[in-house]
Length: 329
Image 1 (cartoon, rainbow, N blue to C red):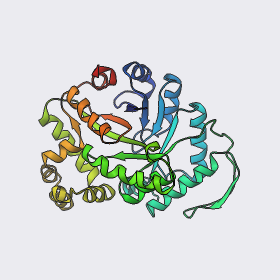
Image 2: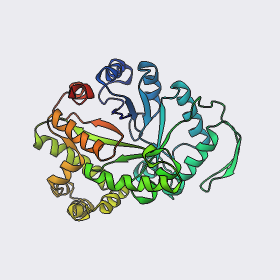
Image 3: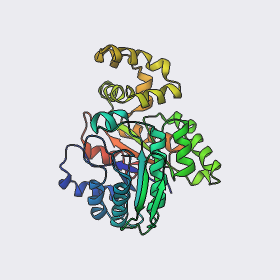
């Protein structure tokens, strides 16, 4: 099934006032609501509300950091969410970044691959309701048993950028969550997820490929690119994303931005980002052009686009409507 998701909650609207917005997502043809966890609300509370506001939507996290909850608390939270939305919840889990984990939460950002792998393996063991005792490498569990067991298996998707984590997503999880990549990057990235699935003896086509896609549905390219450059600089100077884009082959295109950013000249750094990089990484233009661009991601292997609408110069709610599956006829 081809899915089509929206990022929640909606910025600028109090969480308690978003019920009508969420209910309309169903009428517009959206299948999924995906939350995040960085500096806004936590990743689960909005989904708990949406589980009752729109009982047909599938709910997912994109993503929950693997560091910021202890293993037992993570299992408890997932178990509760899965019981609130039986068969409709998917856990997106990832390493996050040194900014969120270390600078904002005061937790050492050590061994991200090992941390994600340990949490995935522990959750696989714990969510079935059996008593868990074992050494997962990054932590050791002594006699934990989850008291709120999901009524159905919870899909676990791993947020992944480069080869190792992508293969982990295919080998030990149910798929991957992608972020900050162009439509033409998708085949390269997905190939590693599929390699991981094959190594585990699993069907590669059964692995879900979700992707957070940033969309500015404004036909004024100057306005959209100006806003997009600020976002690109904020993310792609974080070490994990810088390494990702160097791996994808954008090292030369982004070298000027990285250099100016390190020198502390933020304005000059923005000017160093080429238009074609902006156009690859942030979907912008008239809504119909944005829908066509989203379609390129789907054609290249994304099974679940999760739109993150950035309403620069346009109305947020009208943008959600204009980007919806129903708007495409």
